[in-house]
Length: 123
Image (cartoon, rainbow, N blue to C red):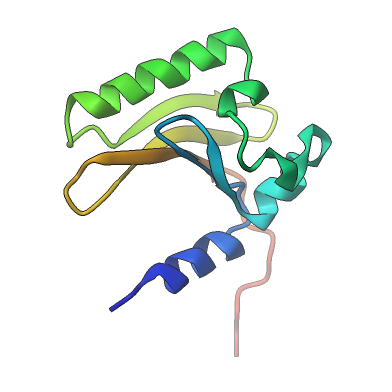
């Protein structure tokens, strides 16, 4: 069963920014939340560019260290990178692997700590 359309739909609906990079650090996908969030930096025009164009030297070095760690073992797949106080969220980097467990890319995962303000579904 081809699950690609389902995975695509999951990221398209996510309220958190999803930016996927390949192992050459090129941005290959941005979901609508990411396009909106990074609009001042170019939004959808960032697709195809290096993630390093969007990060300072310190962040670039951290990304390189995490990718090296991902490459050390197929068990190394997610790492906590920092807490963003302003937005009250934890940020992680996540390895993306193919069926053979080879590293094919990565993305940054955001987990907000804010209490949900939407009303629960009650029908």
